[in-house]
Length: 86
Image 1 (cartoon, one colour):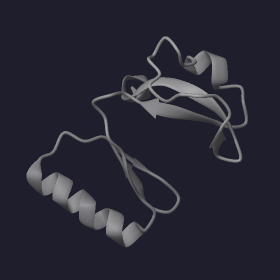
Image 2 (cartoon, rainbow, N blue to C red):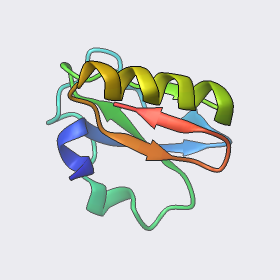
Image 3 (tube, one colour):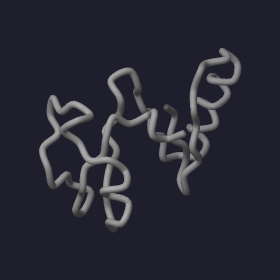
Image 4 (cartoon, rainbow, N blue to C red):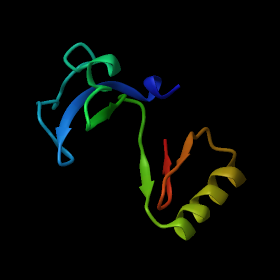
């Protein structure tokens, strides 16, 4: 489930955060139910999660091969241009 990847959510406008989140805990951030109706929002990654965003299909396939070959614990979401690796 996506929620375990994020410690909370923030509203955005034109891909810019509209509330502070530096050093925020999950208690300081919004829940998905509070932002999902908005036209824009962003998830703040949990402390032990990283995301690699590759917006080139060919390059994302190279990383996918590496992930598969090494058997890495990784969740992958395909986008219109490439992939997001968590």
